[in-house]
Image (cartoon, rainbow, N blue to C red; front, top):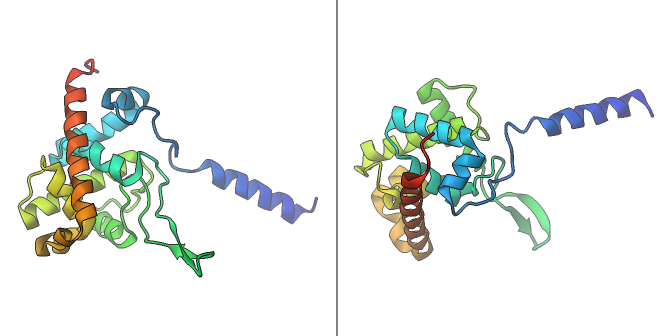
Length: 195
C-alpha cells in the first residue's frame, strides 16, 4: 500500500468517528421517559434550555421528534434531475433541530456561540429556545403553544405572520400532530421517576 493511500484511510477512519454524538435515535420514541432514561444528556440539555429560554421540555422534544426523530445527523432528502441524478439536498437543514445554514449562523452570532454544532443536542435545544423566544417576541406565540410554535418554526417568523401555513393543509395537520405529541410527552414526563 502506498503512503498516500494509507494516510487517506486513516483520515477517513478518524472523520467517521467524529460525528458529534450518536446518530442513532433512542429506541422508544413514543415514550418520553424511555427517551430520557436512555439518553440522560437529552434531559439535561432540555432542562438547561427551559431554564435559559423558558421553552418547556415537552415542546422541545415534540419539535425535535418531528424534525429529526432524534437523529443527530438528520438531513433532508436529495433532489433528483430526470428522476435519477442527485443534484443536492432539498435544503441545508441539518441535525436534531433541522436548522438551516443561514438561521444557524444567525443564532451563533446572536448568542455568541460560534462553536455550537447542530449535531449536539445541547446546542440544538438551545437553538430551539432562541428561535421559539424570537417567535414569542415577534408573533406573540406562547412558549407552551407547541402547535403555533411549530408552524412558525417551519414557515419562519415572517411566513407565520403572513399566515402562509393556512394554504398548507399538510403542515397544519403536522402541527396538530406536534401538539398531540407534546401533550403525550408532557403527561409521560410527569410520571417519570425523579432524577
